[in-house]
Image 1 (cartoon, one colour):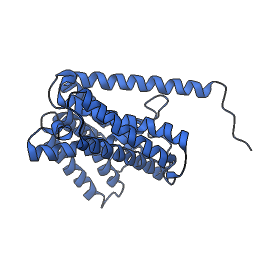
Image 2 (spheres, one colour; image 1 turned 120 degrees about the vertical axis):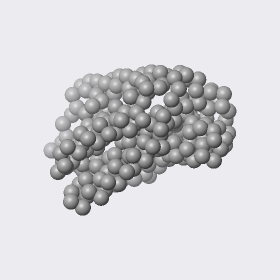
Image 3 (cartoon, helix red, strand yellow; image 1 turned 180 degrees about the vertical axis):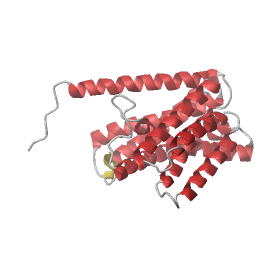
Image 4 (cartoon, one colour; image 1 turned 120 degrees about the horizontal axis):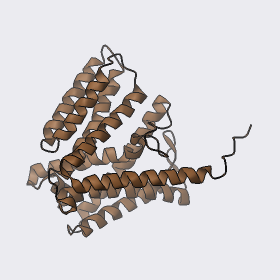
Length: 287
């Protein structure tokens, strides 16, 4: 029996819906990034809570019924704290995740809650830490650092999709994502490096080989994060992480690559800040 033929115009309508949703999300992200301060921290906290909620919906239900609500409240407060105390926020998240991992002795599925706290919390804390506490619109290094990561990931995703469709070739990881190809991965990485380099040049920070290598690393890490989320969805037998975003699915489906890239970007920034005292955003961009 053949598959049903899509209704005329349905594919076009879905594409329009996807584009409109993407424009709204991009505008919201850019607007709050421009505002900075508590506004950006609040959006990051909301995003973290929504990601954790989708994570729990896929991996639950859990015997400890109060735990999900308590964790979402904890995550919101912890992400907001990262504006001033990012290391303490990371430490609190790690402690809660460790406690949940120990609790899996009595409830094995709680281990997924532990991973969910880290998956939702670490990138949200990372992006707030990169942006910093200032409200200097796009003139600050913190804002440029976040734009840098966004540009690398978004360019990677877009170029990987189109180069993969145009060139085709061997599959990248057919077990987890049958449509992704090596040509798409390479094309995405090239575009990510170009996009990141253009951001630092436009911000008068200047191009350097280390910055290009950082962009390449974030591009590869972002693609790995995309595959990891695909693997999780296959494990739990779901197509999308949720239905929050029209035409796209859940928020996890839109930020899977960004989650991993933000965590690595903040780790680089923190490491270089510790060595050279240039700030987290400066540690990422200024070499």
